[in-house]
Every structure is written in C-alpha cells, then in structure tokens.
Image 1: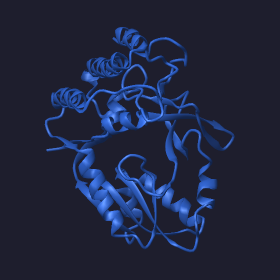
Image 2: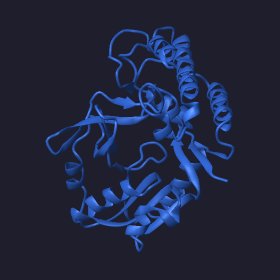
Image 3: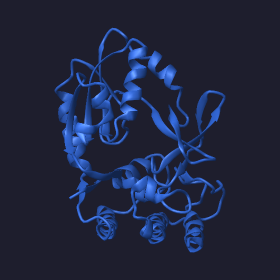
Image 4: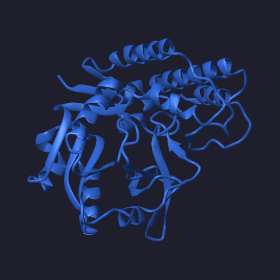
Amino acid sequence: MRRYVITEDLEYLMKRWTRGVDYKIPDHNFFVSIQQRLIKYLNSMFTELVLISYEDLSSQLKQKIQQNNDAIIISIDQVYCEVDSYLEINRIADINTLKKIGLSNRPGCISIDDQLNNLPKDKPIIIIDDGCFSGDTLYQIISLMKEKGLNVQKSIIGIMIDWCNNQFIRKNSTFEIESVYEFNNVIDWLCERDFFIGVPLSGKTVGYMEGNSIIPYYPDISLPYCLPFGNPSKSASIPTNYMVEYSKFIIGLSCELWEEIERLSGKVITCNDIPRLPIGINRDNRSFSDVLVGISSSIK
C-alpha cells in the first residue's frame, strides 16, 4: 500500500506568527478539529495516510542533534528544530511559468553565496532538514557547501523517503545520514501548512530570473497547492477528478481559520496582513477571507 505522509506544523506556525502581530489565534481544540476534518477528507482519496505529530518529529530531531554537539549544527528547516544557525534557502517557482527554476535565498534574506561565505571552514558541519524526498535539493545544497570548502560531515533528516532510490543517496553513497522516520513506496509528503492558504511558509515560494540569478519575491508571494493558483495534481498528488472539489475544500478550511482569528481578535484580517499572500492577490485592505470566498466560487 502506498502512503501519503503529512507532518503536523499548522498550530506551531500560527502561534509563532502571532508573536509579532496583534492577533489572537484559536485554542488547541480548534486546531485538532480542523486537522481531523482535513485528514478525514484526504482519507477519501488516500487510504494509507500517515500523520506525524509536530512534537514527535521535533523532539526526536532534538535528541539526534544533542548527540552531535561537537559539530556546528546548521538547519535548512525553520520549523521542527531550533538551532543556532540556519541556511535560509528555498526552492523557487517562476511567477510566470509556475515551474521550479532552482534554489535561492528565502525572501528578505542575504544571498546563498553570502550565507555560505559566513560559515567557518575549519570546523565540522552537520546539516539538518525536516525531510528528503527526491534528494535533489539536499544534493545541491551540500555540493554548494563543499565547493566553498566547508567540512560537511553528515546530515540529520526528519523524514527520509525511499532510501534505496533517493537521488542524494545514489550520488553520495558514502555520505553519512541519520533519519528519524523512513518511508518507502510513498505517494507524496506534505507539511500540514501547505493545506492552509496564507499561513507562514505555506505553498511554494515564487520568484523570477534576473540574468543568471534567481530572485525571490519580497514580501512573500506563495503558490498554494490548489486551484486556481497551481496544479494540485502535480504539487500535492491530488487525483485529477478530485482537483476542483479538493481546491474548494482547502479554500474553505483556510477561510475558517482566518475567520476564527478575526472573531477572536475583533478585527478584519486584510490582504495586507497575510504572511504568505497567494500569487495573483494584491496586498490591500480587502478582507482576505472574502477574497478567498470569491476565488472559490469561480473554480469550475
């Protein structure tokens, strides 16, 4: 049976977002309820669905990190582990073609080249990431680090997908990797945040080419994993006959989240307030949930 894997992170990200803004988020029971409805819906398409809790993944990553305190720990992931240093790197989708164009710095951060130049060359480095699906991104990042003369000793991965066919493993068979979870025969792996439009780090990061450089848009523009923003069949492995229904469902759940935050906060959340505004929506003073409702009604 092929598995569909989801890592939990929505509640954590929304709590972190409210540290810097004047909004109140729902209690834990609300997030449990909305997550259960998401899982129930996805189970109608994927019979073997695996949900990994935020606490389990983050605590096990922390344990592995603590066992390697003689090296410099650098994380690519911003969610499941807290370390002293991060590589602010993203895969970027082109704003015109919506296709992946390569790696760049996260919006608002210094270039990848500058980030790597700031790392020490005389100390061992361990790279942390929440997951490794195809292995291509990890391969590119570690290759860039080695080109800079950095001593990358090993990588600690939260979720390793298809170890035997992983491209990174095939190209670096002697490179040491530790993992928390390992899965084979996987349909897809997504973070929970990618099913909720507008939340921090959700969807693909959008950018554009400027000469030979990839430039991420700032403030963040995202490409959600649903219609009409993107193709959910390609980005989230949603069966084509479910794409319209799924997209309306995802937009509806997203509206419920933002409307509940509005109710608790006693004020409207506008498109200006959204941390990851979807492609094609302008930053202005319209109600974000109202905009999403209008978009949902146009999906056919």
